[in-house]
Length: 181
Image (cartoon, rainbow, N blue to C red; front, top):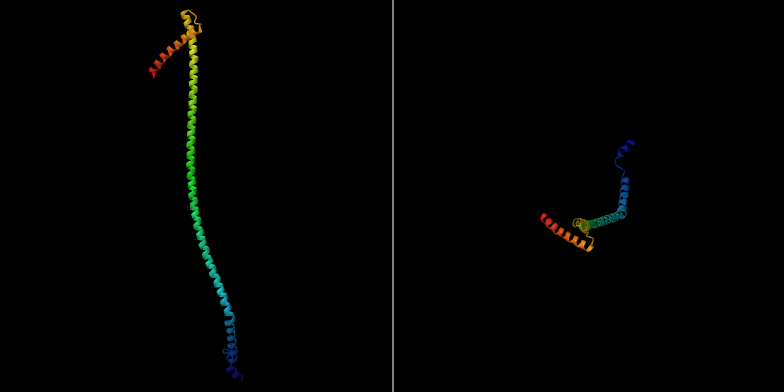
């Protein structure tokens, strides 16, 4: 009998009661999953998809704003570079103008100094000529007094004689100086 029972019992195939209980439990589990679990998973899936979609939209919007800001920044940078170049050119032009003004002032100062020096030289020359005339006049009067034998102490006569002598000397000196030139 044990052999007969063993022959009827197959360990691979379960008993019919186990199959029925397993089937009922499976159907009950399937009902619970479709009624309660599946809608909850779908709801969570939709929420998650909505969040992802919203995140993608926000990211696209942020990227568009970033691109717009970048374009605006590039435009400002180009404008700033243009202004910097203009400022640099203006500074160069202003520096050149200042340099020219300073050069002109220096040249004017040099001309003024040269003119002042020439005026001083002319004044010194005139003073030297006057001193030489006076000395020459005294020497001429002394020499003439020795030659003539009379004293030329009378101031008016002496001056007249000296002036006449110097004028003749100037006239002959200018004529020979003009011939030398």
